[in-house]
Amino acid sequence: MIDVACGRARTLRAITVAVLLSLAAIPTAEAQTTEIHVPYQAQRYDDDFSYLADPAKRSDFWDPIKYVPLDESGDVYVSFGGEVRERLDHFDSPLFGLRHRNSEDDLLHRLLLSADIHLGAQLRAFLQFGDHLEAGKGNLRSPTDLDRLDVQQAFFDYRSVAGSKDGMTLRVGRQEISLGSQRLVSQRESPNVRRSFDGVRAFYVDGDARVDAFITKPVVDKPGFFNDQPDETQLFWGVYAVLPVAFVPGLHADLYYLGLDRKNASFDEGVGHEERHSLGTRLWGTAQAWDYNTEFVLQVGSFGRQDILAWTAASDTGFTLQTLPMRPRIGLKADIISGNDNPKGGTLGTFNPLFPKNAYFTEADLVTPTNLIDLYPTVTAHPAAGVDVNTGVDVLWRESTHDAFYRVPLIPLVRSQQSKARYIGSEFDLDAGWQIDQHLKVSGAYVHFFAGPTLTQAHGQDVDYVGVWSSYKF
Image 1 (cartoon, helix red, strand yellow):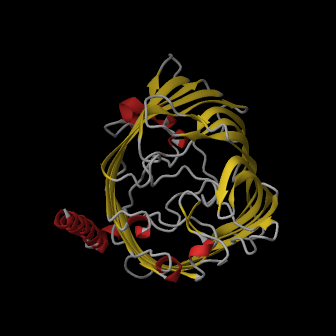
Image 2 (cartoon, helix red, strand yellow):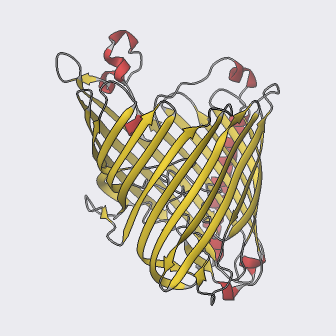
């Protein structure tokens, strides 16, 4: 069995390395001639195929189902869409070997089918079904990987201004939500099952400015058929504004308040009722060859009988060498995310990242963003049209040695009493994606986590991760 497992690991690594090398080997001349237009958005309800009302603009194989008129005027129409994603993940020593697993192999299948029904210029209905299957040895990420046929999204929109994206929109039903850079609220793309919420959302758009307000409950994914339901132990609400800063070219500012109520929250302190309020701002934009994305969040509230006072400061800054081959971007990500300094002090300092994108640091998804300090220099290159190759080393420490090291989703993995070391380890990352055409994308990633004293003192060890996946959208 050991030989078989080792052989499988070597095969998976070879596949990924071959994919990455093949992407990097594509001639760079192609990158300077054409760019690939992808009409499909991260949230498929943002797709807009109304231009296909003009038959002369139909050129793609799937165009006949992207705009299907239901009346003579064409104001009532339906747009059908979907996605098929196949993903293979392999881990050596998953969860740093602290849960007695030598390896983990998962073959993940995702099928999404949607219908976007426009009932005139002001009313629409969006329906999306999802089927998510998992095969292989282990169950590392479930329940975010296995969910049989169920309703992924189902909502109604009412738009106050006909024929314009500006104005107020009221959305009621099950929906995916992502806000800003997805540090705190994301649709959770990397795991098999994307995250959705049940509730009400209203947003106002005026050019580049937008304000969202919502009150929701996260959806609990269950493995059976049509049995997903809202989590009655949680309530999530907030207001999020995105505003251009007119006197600084290229600068945008996000201002937001997010509220979360959880009945069974778990931290290194224990389990209790959490009511948390997050106040944040994000400054982002471009300045010639520079790009920047900086975010500050303060959290207050209560956990059991304790107060909450937590915070984070995060940044992602890069410089793109436009005149060099492959247009390399030299970047630096840096985070400082509070942990709990004094377990007996009556105030919980552990930051709650709420509903972040799971692959916050790397595709291996080994670390959740709380009680951390990290520095992550990166290099990104574009060898050809549609090809991105990224590599870097993320170095991580605990912000407080009196708090746990947490794994996704905010579960203590190494308790404070198991290790007093600050240095967690470093994570080498190499990943690449190739958008072959507007429909098909293939990707691969390799991650090696070098365990530091925080983990080794608790008998943890290094982790190897290899992943390859493909996505076809229509």
